[in-house]
Image (tube, rainbow, N blue to C red):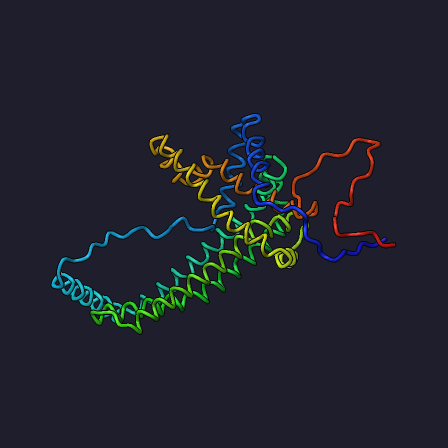
Length: 341
């Protein structure tokens, strides 16, 4: 007997709000029913690994720029910048014999450290998913069990990061050269401004594209790998079919995730204020911050899992209880698949 897939069907009820309650319940069951400090620390370690090489936590801090009160101050500022620029460029040109090798060494070193963190983060994603899906606190078992699929995820993320670097770095360089040219000239010009704005919008668009790929990979492709034991590109092809059949639903999902993140951020900020910023200071410490924010991290990991499960039992990572003896047979475990003699 073989199995053939039926034509893809649209699940009747898919809701971005339906996944909130079970994700919240998952947090309570894992961390508070009952409370186990050792379990909390172990799962926190897995979540900490899973967060390696995620969005860098940086951001654009508001600069302390204050406009000059007169043109004379602006002129002096431009002249000072020109003088510093020419001094720096003269120094670099006079010492290229050691600056270039040092720059190459530092670039390769940073790239190697980034790759190691990316590898650890890829392993951590499956470890954390394993803990959330099974409500267990284990490190050694998922580390060994999901090694091959995690390595496949690492290769995909490494390739994606290198492609992003190759595509975006020239645009950044061009934008900086254009801005430096206008600063050295002492005043902006319309072609330069238009070029800078165009390059910035292109970078913004590319950042959105790569961010969505990373988001879909973490939220949905990794769970499919976890379920199938498949390589990352195979899981991506399966998810792409689901995405192509439900573009509107996943668009709503992304928009709702933005709203949900804002709500969670407001709650975390309120907790920081209530604790007189003590929790904020502790959360900035490596690993300690992950442990403190573990309920939030588990919720953010569980929410897309419960959302994905709405597309059918074949996408449900949470194990079901076995049916009692004598119970009538249930539906096929893989909707859309029918036995063929």
